[in-house]
Structures are given as structure tokens and as C-alpha cells.
Length: 316
Image 1 (cartoon, rainbow, N blue to C red):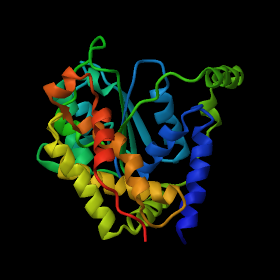
Image 2: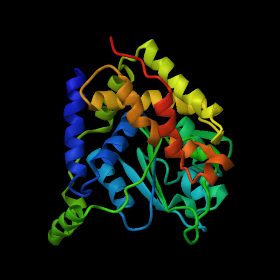
Image 3: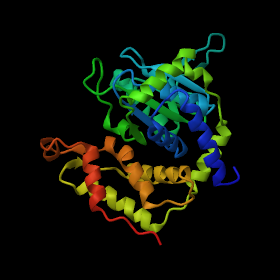
């Protein structure tokens, strides 16, 4: 990885490939790629049938990573995710059999249909890049990314993800219904077959690691750091929220802002980068108060109000 221009070059190729399968959602595609480059995990929440799994599969192919996909249902066990130990006849030794999460990119389809116990099996993997089975720790391949999909809470057979797991997702994105012209383009694209088969890998795991290093080295000034902390603290004191953003969320906003800066062609962060990533990075981590609920506000509404009240630093 010679310089920041290489990050942009690879990123444009990755987005070009994913657009073959996902039409008209360029902003969401950019946020997902930014989260991958920032070293985070992605939660896609929406109603069934709008393309959540298609987007996840498109990224897995374009990124050229070894991936596993698991359809979560109530009968999926934690050992299906993390692996298990089995007694090997002949030697009498316990041998580890890897679970589905032992890969570079883990696609957790409809995660909130699984039991809480199975959902929690992902916590160690998402936070520490490892799984522990029968007291033995097994490192995950690097890079490691979780792209999970879930249907809105209240849909048949779903349950809330625990707060500790929600906080481990860098971003939560929603595709929503396509525009009319995009839906027509989707129909047209599928006349020749599934567009997923047309997606070609752009980078290797090593190149993704190098892109992540370039993103991590993006310059961020003290003024921007203070701006992010001021925004985070505003979520903790706002009467419309009973739970604000965690320190983990602070680090996620910084990392996402760096990634977006690189994708916008800069090797430094500006206030606009922070403002762009704040809603997808924080909205799923906040808890609304009765005041906000009575006013029919969403977490995104509250964050927009905070962005309007917290003063952004001026560029010099």
C-alpha cells in the first residue's frame, strides 16, 4: 500500500463490484465499506426482502475474503458458531472442530431469530477476535468482520439483541425500499441471472489489512477529537435519552470518520466526516427517554438535534 490514493482506487473498485447486485444505495454501500476499513462490524436492519443478505454476500465476494454464512434460527447452538471439542478415538485426545465463525467474513443472517445464548456466543469473537471452547482460546483469522442482518423487532420469531452486542456493531444501516427507477433497474439486471455471480474479488485479505493501516494512520486534529467527545457527552446529558453513547462508541466514531475521510480522498478528518458517520454509528446504541417517546422522536432525530447544538470546530 503505497499511499492514500491506493485506498481510494481499491475502494472505488469494491463499490463498483457491489453495485452490480445492490442498486441505488450508494450511501449505505459507502458506510459499510467504511466500517470494514475501520475494523468494525456491521448490522443491517430492515424488513425481509429488501436486499440485506444480497448486500452482505456482495461485499464478501468483492473483498475476496474466506467467508461463512449461517442462517440463525432458534435451534442453532452456540457450538455451531464457536466450534466444539470432540474425543478422538485412538489417541484419547480432545480435538477442536472449528465453528462457522472461524473465517474472515462471517455472515450472520437474521441474527435476532436465535436464542440469547447463541447470540452471546458472538460477543468474544466480535470484541477480541477469538473464541474460547472448553477453556482453550482459538484466534480468528485476520482480518475478521461480522456482517449481521436482522428483521425489525416485533416481526414473527424475533427478539431483541442484548445491549452489549448492539454496542459491538460499529454501524447499523437500513436499506429501505428502492426508488421506482432503481427497482426497474433491479428487474432488468436479473433478466440474465443472479448478478451476484458477476461480482469479482478486488482485493486480498493482506491488501485489506494494508488498507486498514492506512485508514488508522489518517490524521485527526485535537479540535476534531474534542468535537467528537463533545457530541458523545451531549448524548449522555440530553433529557431525551436515558442512555448515551459508550466510550466504545467514541472510538467507533473516530475510526469511522477516518475511514470516510479516506473514501472522500483526504488523509485528514474534517467536521463533515464526523457529522456524516454520527447517525449510523450511534443511533443503535442509544435509549430514548419517555420525553422523546411522547414526542414520537427517534434516536436519529435526537442526534440531529445534538448536531445542531454542538458547535463544530472551524478549519484553519
